[in-house]
Image (cartoon, rainbow, N blue to C red; front, side):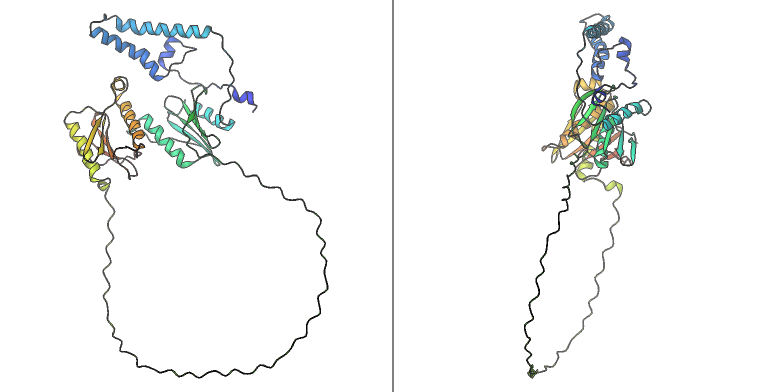
Length: 380
């Protein structure tokens, strides 16, 4: 594939969201949070203004329509402006972009998130089992799985239609949009950077064999033969002492300790983590609004954390729990990370406990705190 052909954009079939389809936007492409702010956000602002008697009830309808008119006018004006042809070389190889294009096609049939891994045996698709995890948590679990698998190249298709591309020749991962345009090229690397091949030195050309001069061997010297006299061995005298009496004492063998039974699932985690889970259950019984998280900062000091006010107004309960877990994932990597964490999901149906040293998080049911057999990645 030539370099100009590799640089051109390749479009794939992708279903647009409702807001751009209603306005028939062609040149302006707002993302998810911008669409929510321009549509549902303006309607909510009109409701608040009408309830506060700052505007009439018509503001609930007029405000979103006025903002939609401004967005449509901006789209028309943008289309009338002349385009500047800018040719930007895309990072990554042609094989990586072919895998990215394949991930965009398969996103129409397979619900994201999922990942495509290219190894020596071919391309395979992996998708985690959806349980209580949100889309952000599933994408984080897939990214951790890519680090463990270490394929030649990989593509992660996120829930919003965006694609992450990784390969060993790139120092950073890249982020492409649904139309395969490069959105960012500085994602944290997932695959180890491949080392370049070591150039072997060419073998030396065969030259003429050196001439070896053979000198005649010198005459052997005469050998003098001398008769050897027999050696006389000295005679030694050894005094034998009487052997002491040996008493035999039988020492009974010590009993071997019996093997300890394997710990039951209820023994997973420390007592302090289970005490934190019981504290979270007590807050649920007292009427605390889920989702929320309890952080044990120091021994015995517990801090309760909720989603911020704007996020709680725009995001659903599952999205708030995903945002809380993403924040805890970043907090666990800091030097002042908490000792252990208890995260309560929507309606307090399930609680998850985290602490260092666990293979995965502890998922328990609300009320009885009985273990639920769900494998949740540990944030520590």
